Length: 174
Image (tube, rainbow, N blue to C red; front, side, top):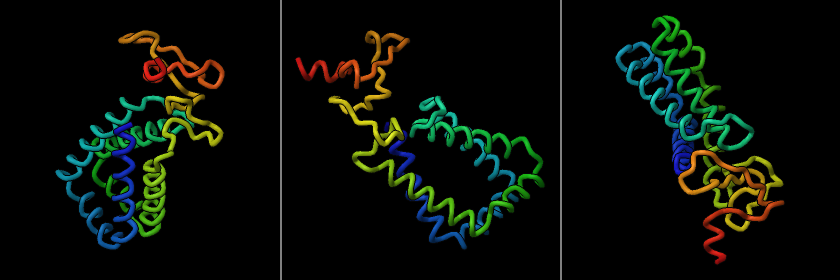
């Protein structure tokens, strides 16, 4: 959840900058694509960040975690393409997306996703509007509880039908 909050804040900051400073960002990105050393650093950073997201949120699903997983995969794929493709193709790719429309649309989407992720009642575990948190605060539909402390496998519990099975809630009730 900390990574989701971090990415949400990052999206807000970068989205606002993309919306208001896009005219100065576009030439900088064009120069970045022409500089192989900077592109190498960017590609390696994207791969590292993408892998961190994928390892934290591995499942692609119609949930906030799934959205983060897709973002992680996009980062990894883009980083690998920057490293693997010839410079001319990378520059052509950057030119295609380095325009006012993409900055405006991408900036607005980034701010929106970032803002939603920061709402106090934001349920980062489900995009289902009918999903309500159980007594422990977890999503009733996707609440996963470890079978035993330290166990690798997990047992899915539906808090709506099985009652809250969260160990933290059970300790609080006792």
